[in-house]
Length: 217
Image (cartoon, rainbow, N blue to C red; front, side, top):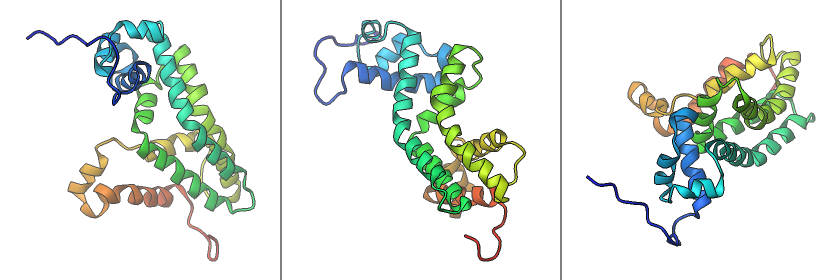
């Protein structure tokens, strides 16, 4: 069967422009296949644009990958600002602020699963891509959380030997495999499906916080 060539010319108005379509397709490809597994022709086909547009808009596969990181970083701007505001608000108890911060991270993970997949598939990179990933997608979140975690450790709200290790384990707990809600619907329907998110947050709080003292929030 002969493949249908990608049409050239003006894109229909209901479709995103070529650059935006390529970015969306590239984030999806890199998130599922990794850097080496993704290829430019496949990305262009998924974006429904001619493969030559990759070179026009981005120049190379490496530059396309970096543009994906920039796009994900831009999506983090507002949540990170909110996270920083929570961390800096020392008028509120640290337990309360940690709860809000964890809920914010969990909500973002639910709304942007591609972000988690992108990081997961590239986190083991030890070269320049690994350094870019850390600086732009991980460090901004950890920088905000580190302050809260250290404050929580000092207050006895959480038990941890090192804030980075606590953050690592917490991040994994808040980013379970994509099929978890469906699986839990089979194992325990009362905490599966739509109930999975709230149940996960409650379980995380029970595991990652020390029991509150009487009269404390």
